Image 1 (tube, rainbow, N blue to C red):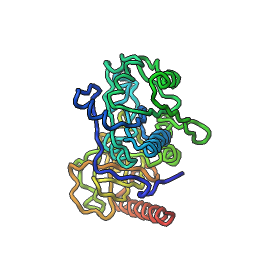
Image 2: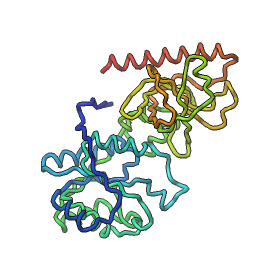
Image 3: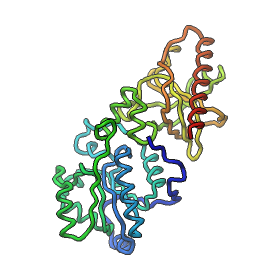
Image 4: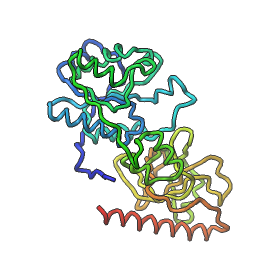
Length: 332
């Protein structure tokens, strides 16, 4: 799998973000003087297939001296039209913005998908999109738009010929001879196939949460933890167990080890929690929002007959995680 080094990205301190689809006259005039190419998609996981579409738009933007824009939705479309079928999230809103900044996006058009938007015809949708003064659209081969997805790449081709904009349709990327999709990635994560999920995402699967105060037992045995309450109904999570983790706290990155589950040794955890022990971190993290990436599965969650045996196993878990991170550093 290609792992992109830090210098492979154009880092932007500022990315313009638009959260609505009804621009006023002043806003429309502003975009008229700053033409762009727009990468379009639901982009619900920002996986390697989505990255390919955005990279293609970026290449076009560079060669034609245009702004790079991404059009997507701030929520999954099913949340508005079939709430019960809304899939688990593969990426937090904050991580989505961070990645798009790193990929050199100048303008993020991040529109909430609602009933009003769902009723737009393909022609009405494109008319709305013209407010951003695009000269080229880029999408994947399975892209659809407009009322009941009646617009597709064929209608886009016709519209591009009639209206004079360029269109790039990217073939769908495959992994192990199957198309990469968010649905397939969610299945891999649920099955514990972290390596497959990483290959398709282009990064480790992750979860975001606020650090809550727990029982503080870890501190008493030399393994203080930051506790993140998690929900499988909202976020795609791997099976319960102990994992080597990379954890982001704002601009700070830590390696660590964490237990995902109910901590059966103590029998008093009533909801699933990710207990994260960070290496080389002495900060008070209560209230912080952490993004934890699952790098490697270490072992299944288990009940220990004594605190001493639990502590001994935690030492082994830490040593195994440290060895894995050291090996990864040696490979780079």
